[in-house]
Length: 71
Image (cartoon, rainbow, N blue to C red; front, side, top):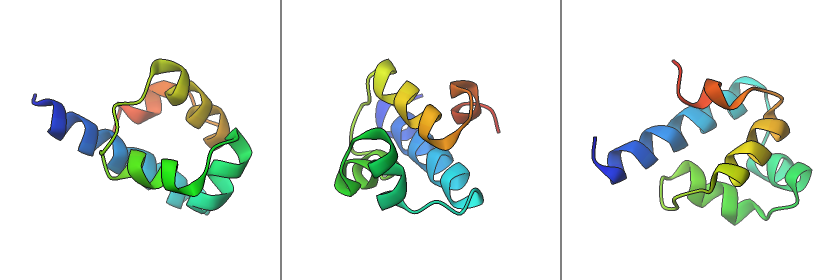
């Protein structure tokens, strides 16, 4: 799978989980010490997040990281 497609799919999955929990980008960002633009770029697939960043996002969404990759 190409990098761009993988990152876009990851971002879409994070957005789906966040919206399913009724959390805004701003709320998620605040809960993990990031800014809203950072979450926006992540969900748009415009950044290649580190494993630690994904861990922080998972904690902010109260899910295991595996939820980002299982559909």
